[in-house]
Structures are given as structure tokens and as C-alpha cells.
Image 1 (tube, rainbow, N blue to C red):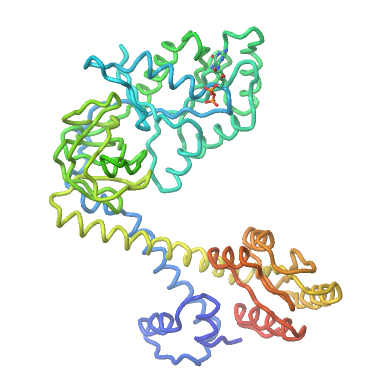
Image 2: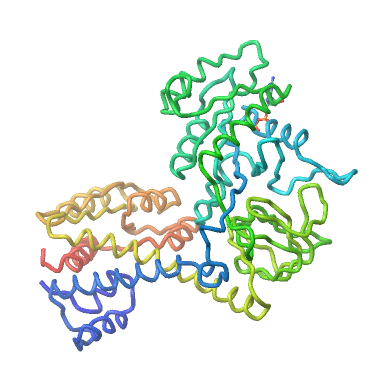
Length: 480
Ligand code: GDP
């Protein structure tokens, strides 16, 4: 029925002292070897879960919000340009479309300016400004979203009219959907003989991307990135979509935003392309940028021209940072260097902490849901052994541990050392790895460590069985 403090700590992969602390707060003085009944153990797990979750929440309520001087004032918010990302299958014309728009539409006020790839650019049309993220595909989009940064307002899904819907087209749809970002379809290559626009519409409709003229909500624009046909109509469609979305931001305040690209330049030092989300970024501003900070020595637009300021949705290259930030990092203007340095340090610590807490929260959550009485505990094992006879014996005896409360599944077993593929499989199915008279190779060991997987070596069968029994007992708090 009972589990000792030290066993519970082991099961939760935390220090026993943390459990003792929690119990002390609940008014219970316990020692490390003291057995706890199941209700108490549950309380501890719940309490630890709360603490972990709260910590995640707090770290998520990012530095940005705490440090930002400007509180978003709805009344002062003005219409801002949309930020667009281009997605679609390889060779369907994403790069060609972005290049065509940049070449023909980026206004270069100063003669002799050469458009440069800085990771984003903006164009001025009759209907307003539009900013494009200049890295096509969903890799950058996903990487940023994984870091909690969302800069894209609208996704342009490029589909070649002679090829229709392909795997990466579907991925693009899925990504836009997951991010809650509306799509506009650019049916490209309509200059080709074998272009079949209707087929594209049909195939996309089958994926719930239904054209307006078919009663759906998605704008389909026929274009050719080669001849430029339809590109103006596409820009109009973007402006129209943006209008519907009523995109707004405060302009007259200290800036904050996102890093979209960064590099280390031999001559210029750390170079970061940032996209302003709110406020106006000015040359001379002191900014905090992820873990980096610095006074903006120089602010440059996509034509290589020095600019004095960049407002909402406008990309700009920033020089003067202490180091290279990471794409997806948030930046914001801070008062002074001391402030910035402290905040950068804090940011570093928080990032590390958040990662740890997330891991812990996931683990605890897992265990908590498993500890729910109605649910049966599922224990997955991956077994590798030196000879087939042992594999069979282990598999059989381990699976026979199963009873009314627990299911022990050997999800995979075989002869030979533990390989990286084994470790990956174990990670994917949350399995504990058991090596019987075999070891994990180097790649597997690294992966196991990185992914925080459970690995146990045995050379006596009944010891393996005993250990699995004991951990199951530990979690359930009941004897088997
Ligand atoms: P991405 O992989 O989606 O970025 O595709 P690219 O822009 O690199 O284009 C792939 C190929 O299709 C290149 O050879 C382009 O010249 C060609 N292409 C792109 N757009 C068009 C178009 O509208 N019409 C025709 N005929 N060819 C195009």
C-alpha cells in the first residue's frame, strides 16, 4: 500500500528533499525512509504538479511583459501591415514568387540601392504596405512557432497548376491550420500549357481549402512567377485579407518584436534581422534580444540603406548587439545597459529553468493520469538480450507481471546491443529499455541521456523481473 519518500522521489526523478519540503508545507514532518500511504503520495504528486505548472506559467509570462514599459493601449492602436509567409511544395515556385515581388515591388528611394536578402522585406502597394518573410517553406515558420513566436499573419500557399496538391502542400495547410493563420492560394505556373487550375481547386477542396467561387472562404489567385501575371491581384488579395483581419499595433511606443534571421558578419559583428511587432524601433535604442543586448549602432532596410526608425510589421537589420541572437528570439527596448545585462542573464536562467520544468511537468502529468484509479497503468518495455532464449524468457516473464492494475507490454525485443534506433523507438513509445547481457552503443547512450530515458542492465533474469515488479509497485503503491 505504501511507498517510501525516497522511492517516490526516484519514481518522480526529483530530489527526496523536494518531497520532504512539500510535506513540511502541508504540515507533515517525514524522513527519507518513511512510508507514505497512497493518498498522501497522490497529494505530493499533485502539489508538485502545481508547482511545476505554475513555474512554467510564470516563465511563459515572459520577461517581455514584465520589462516592457509600454502597455498596449487599445485606443492608440493603428492599422499595421500584414506579415506574410510563403509555403508550398518544392519547385512549385515559392522562391520565384518572392523574388519577383521583391524585384518589381520593393521601392528603392535612394538610387543605386541593391536589394539584399535580409530574411524579410516589405513592399508598398496602392492598397498599403505588405511585409514578406523571405525564407520560403515551413521550416522557419515551425521553428519560430516552436519557440512561441508567431510573426506570420497570412500564409500564401503556392501550388503549381501543372502539379497540383503534393505532400508539402498538405503540410503547409496543416501548419497554417495549427497556427490559426488564414491561407491565400497562389495557383502558380498558369503560363504553362498543362496548367489545370480546376484540378488544383478540386484537390485543395478535398483538403478543406475551398475556393470562394465554390462557396468557400479561401481566395485563389492565378499567377505566374515567371511572367508576373496575377501578382498584383495576389497583392490585392493579401491587402483585402489583412483588412478583414483588422491588424492593429501601437506605433508610438518603445518597440518590441521578433528576430527572424541572424548571423555573425566578419566586418560588422552580430547581425540580426528583426521584425517590429509593436512600437517603433529607433537607431540608438538599447535593446534586449534573447540573451543578447546592445545599443543599436545602425538600423538598415532591405535595400542596404540606413534608416532612422522601423515601425510595426517592418523588418530591419540591427547592428550593435553583444552576440548573435536566435531566430524566434523576442526583442524589446530597455532603459539602459545595466538593465539589459541583468535581464539578459535572467532570460538565460529562465530559459533553462523553463526547459527543466516543462520536462518535469510532463513527467508528473503522466504519472498523475496513470495514478488515477480507474485507469490501468501501462508500462512499456523494450528488451534487448544476448541470445534468443533469453529474449523469449524475459518477454514472457515480464509480460506475466500484468494484472488488473497494470499492463506490462514488451513493445519490442530482439538479440543484440541497444542501438540508436532502439532508443528512438523507446522514446516514441515512452518505454523503459532493458539490456540483458548487452550494452547500449555510443549513439544510443547519447540519445538516451539527452531524452532522459530509463535504461537498466541485467544479467540475471529474476533480477530483471524483480526490478520491474518493484517499480510498478512503487508507482501504484500496491504489492503485486
Ligand atoms: P520553390 O522550390 O518552390 O522555391 O520553387 P522555385 O521558385 O525554385 O521554382 C522551381 C522551378 O519552377 C524553377 O525552375 C522556376 O523557374 C520554375 N517556375 C517558378 N514559377 C514559375 C511559373 O510561374 N511558370 C513557369 N513556367 N515556371 C516557373
